[in-house]
Length: 223
Ligand code: CA
Image (cartoon, rainbow, N blue to C red; front, side):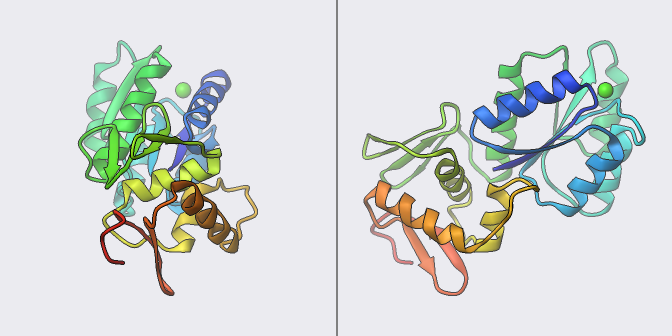
């Protein structure tokens, strides 16, 4: 899952990027509203963390512009603790949730997990598909109770597919959600990663939809 952080305070920005990266997400970041708006308008994010007090273009204007442009990704806003009116204008602009500053990183991460799973239609932080269970909290995957050791990229691939297991995901979409904006993207490498993850799962769960992409399904279901 790919996340955008828009925050002008360099320390908070870095802390958010580090914590999200450690949690298995791929993260892009911006330090002013204009750059943040541009990224959210041009790149497909699964979730955005948006500070409201930003230089060049304020957070509420950024959010209003995204919603006007038709972008529906979940947005978590960061507000100052004593500014209740910020929360109101944030929600009115299209925010899905908020955290007040100063915040505990664990709370931000928990809210991001909740936003990601809700936007994909899941009710709990443990996603299951047949014998496979992916715990978005600990970033661990098991198959029939057996833990599977994955690299961070393999985990991202499986996490994205688990969140979207009801449909076929194509290679371009996977590339866009697994790598950050600076990565030299090559959709051919996806095939290699899918092959490795398949081998680690040991069951026929990642089906190839010819010419379309991949679909995650329990082993006994058809492609
Ligand atoms: Ca700020």
